[in-house]
Length: 477
Image (cartoon, rainbow, N blue to C red; front, side, top):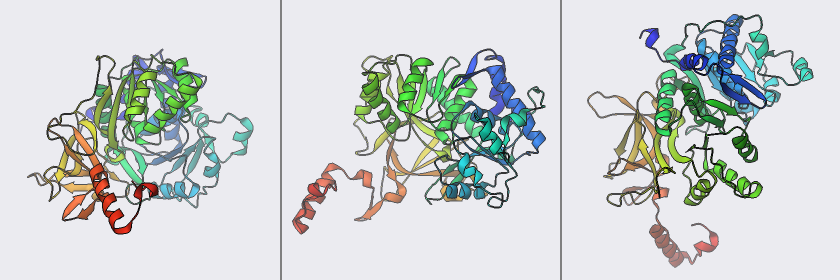
């Protein structure tokens, strides 16, 4: 493939440097940077990394809270052909070492909040580690104490801001290693390509309607695929990024009002916190500036959705279902649209699954297939394929653990999501359960999520008859 047609996540920099040259594109506390300033920062850091000795394919681990410098590091490492492996700041030292031994970083970047356990990481613990960088220090004394660390500013020193150089790529066009526990309980490095991020971003832009006038609040950590993929979508359209170190509902509501936030992503627990804090501190005040909310990590209950509509009456609220191995979202569904009177999500009764949760329709670039169970004409494993899927688990030549082989003539590989579901006649995907949670009974596969009220009632009566148990008192169901 010719380089001029090869996808690279840093292709967004050209747009930021031109269309958003004098417009604010990042806000972090009191620090605001225009498109030109942000791009200059990325280019200067990239030049410093080359001078330091970072090479194509080298892995850089980042352990830090959200910030504008986190975004800068992500793009600078990608620009010179490196691979970014964010470490979860909630991890213990043991978990962080385990992850780093897996991906073998040559450079570890941290901020002050995560530096305590980074100091305890000895070079002998991680043989690949050559350099450590303190992302930013607000305390001179603190920086002096950590003379074993370089700083972002040191790397940028004595570097003239270059023009946008030729992009570099790691092997297989890998750009990010995102950790997930998978089914083993141990960190697994999901290797994601430039193409996967760009494809996923274009889907979010098309479905959610993101644009350059949006002001996006980073509520999700940049160590997770949801935060990373949404950040890339916003970088591509040239939106303004408002970054909180970590999510706090009270602060988030204040920042939404102060910075005229138009969009953010959430999970049900975050939305519940926003509703609770809004009720207690703002007396249920409305925020009419927010126009788009994308929910993931589980469905919003009808109660949460109703409360969310009351707080954000002008927001289109969407829900997404996805996974790290698919670079975030596979399907989308609109839960509330204020532009449509009496908008209500309705599903046809004909051939509708009798259980499960509707997660909407596949994104434009997504191929989904339900590989039916042998004893079912409707339910089966949810498989996907396309440019959004991971390259592999880091350290594996082929993603063998999660690949199903298609029975089609081409014998192309499908990625097994590990979920069980069904399609209705309108193309909506219904999520029923996890494939490893099924129970074989009476020659049929039964999933815990399929146990309906009637099943529970029958089981309750049966067990009471045999054992005289009061299951309601035991709160088993």
